[in-house]
Amino acid sequence: MMAFFWSRKKLLLFAVLAVSALIFVVSDQLARKHIPQPGFSIGAPFSLIDHHGMPIYQTVFEGKPSLLFFGFTYCPEVCPTTLVDLTRLTEELNLQIPIYFVTLDPERDTPQQLADYLPYFGERITGITGDIDAVLSLSESWGIYRKKIPTSDGDYTIDHTSTVFMLSHTGDFAGTIAWKEDSKVVKQKLLRLASR
Image 1 (tube, rainbow, N blue to C red):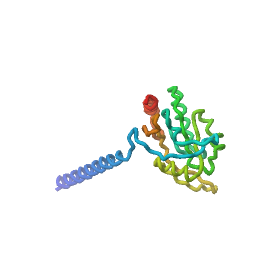
Image 2: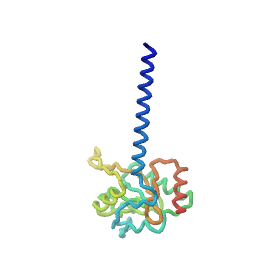
Image 3: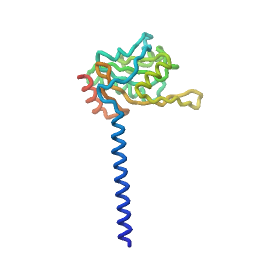
């Protein structure tokens, strides 16, 4: 009787593991279908303002590979860490890859605010801001998650996607860099991007 009980238990466990594995494989395949492949064109055309107060358009991404990151200057950790890491790694590799920082908080991140903030992270970072509807339209076209969260002091912070997008010299999607991705892997990605 006990042997029969354990056999049924093992059979049930095997069935659960098999179904779990199948769900994982199917989920992974579905997720991969929604990951843009290199060369895929994403992002809407835009007309915004850089941190010098000058007009800036989507054509700025053309001509050389670049990095694109969405964040905000009042971000406590993800944004400053990402900008420091991108600057450090590109400098270590001696790569002149421009970095574009699109604010998700244009109400506070004026050109002057960005101009005061960005020099702490290097000279090759261009800030992008402008009308809030235009900024949100651009971020949505890149699939960026953005949620304004009230804080206890009556202010707010923003929860957002932390992915860095790599763009080819034609301005097309060429891959991503994940938050806290291993620096050796990131360096390999940057070298491949620079050789495109």
